[in-house]
Amino acid sequence: MRYDKIDSRLFTENRRNFRKQMKKRSLAVFISNEAPTRSADATYKWRQNPDLFYLTGIDQEQTSLILFPDAPDEKFREVLFIRRTNEHTLWWEGRKHSVEEAKEISGCEQVMWHDRFPEVLRNLMHYADHVYLNTNEHDRSVLTHLTPEAEFARNLMEKFPLHRYERSAPIMHRLRASKSDVEIALMKRAIAITHKGFLRAMKFLKPDVWEYEVEAEITHEYMMNRATGQAYEPIIASGVNACVLHYIANNSQCRKGELLLMDCGAEYANYNADLTRVIPVSGRFTARQRKIYDAVLRVLRKTAAMMRPGVTLQEINNEAAKIMESELIGLKLLTKTDLKNQTDENPAYRKYFPHGIAHFLGLDVHDVGNRYEKLRPGAVLTCEPGIYIREEKTGIRLENNILVTKNGPVDLTADIPIEAEEIEEIMNSK
Image (cartoon, rainbow, N blue to C red; front, side, top):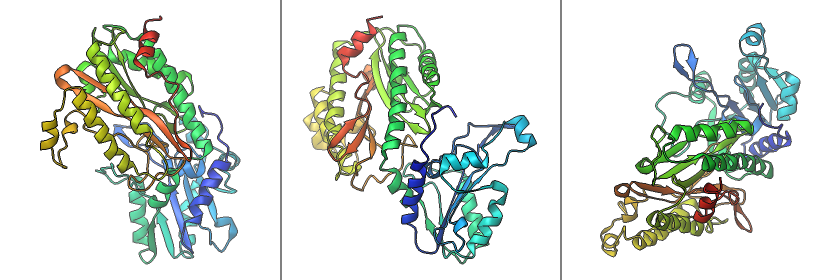
C-alpha cells in the first residue's frame, strides 16, 4: 500500500455502528468492486467499493463481508472473505493478503478464502429473516449498466425469494456522512498533498505552457507524496475553458492575461481532497479579474460560515444563492429588473452561477449524505461558489473543504493560499 497503515479500530467501530442499526435476525452482505472492461483484455483502473473499505479497510479485489449478529454459531457473526493467492496470481499480479494480514487490517477475527463465500452465505441465509443488500443510491448517480452489486442482489433474490430484503444504503449514508477523528486525519493528509501540488503549479505556470503540463506537475507532486493519484479527473482550464464546468481535456495553451482554473485534489488511503483555485497566467490579476475574484471569495467565506450543525445542505444552497445575487448585481452582471423577472424554476443568478455551492466529501468526492437532513458534527463539505462569464472568457471558482463541528465550521484547507495578494506574491517570488 502507498499509504500508512490505518488503525483497525476504525473498521471495527464502523462495523459495530452498522450492526447496531440492523433488524433482528438479519444479515448484511457487502461485495467488492470489479474493474470494468475498457477494450480487448484491458480494464479500467480498479478502486474498492467505498462501503466495503469503510467496514473492512481491505483494499483488494474479490473481497466480501457478511455481518450476521444473530447467527446461531458465533464464528459466523462477522466473516470476511479474501482472495486466495495461487500460482497464476503470483506470476501475473503478485501476492495478495494472507488471512493473518487481513485480520490485522480489518480487525475481523473470522477470515476465509473467497471461494468459500457462496457456500457460507447459502447456509447462513436459512437462519436469517432479513437480508441487507448494498446498491448505489447516490442522488447524482445515473446507472446505464448492471453493477456487480446490483447483479449480486438480483441473483440472491432469485435464489431466496421469500426473505425480506432491506437497503444498506440509508444506514451507510448516515454513518459515512459523519467522519471520525481517524477519517478526518486521513482527509487532512490528502489535503496536505493537494496543497503541495497547488504550490508547485503556481511556481510552474507562465504564459504559453500547456494545461496538460500543469496537470503533469500537480500529478507528479501527488505521487511523490504517496497519494494513490488524482481524486477525480482534474480540471485545468485556462481562459474561456473555465466556463465549462467539467472541462477535462486540458489541452489548451495558457495565454498571457488569462486566468487558469485548477479543480483537482489528491486521494490518500481512499479519502479525497477537493480543491479549486484560480491564478493569473501572467502572475497578476487585472482590475476586472480581481473584482470578480474577490466577489467569489466573499461568497465562499459567507457560505462556509453557515456550515454548522442543525442546518441542511439544501438550506445552505438557498442562502448562498441570495449572497451570489447581491455580488452579481455589484459586478453589474445582473440588474434589479433581472431579479424581478426571474422565476423559481429559472433564477437569474444561474446565468452566471449554474451549479450548487456544496457537496459532501469523503471516501467519494461527491460523498454520500442527505442534503435534506440536518448536518451533524463530523460532516465534511466542499464550499465552491463560482462566477462564469463567457463573453469575458472568464471563469472563477474557489473551493475549500469545511469540517462541521459543534463549535462551528473549521476550514481544513485554510492553509492553502486563496487571497489574491498572496497568490500574486508567490507567483512573482520565483
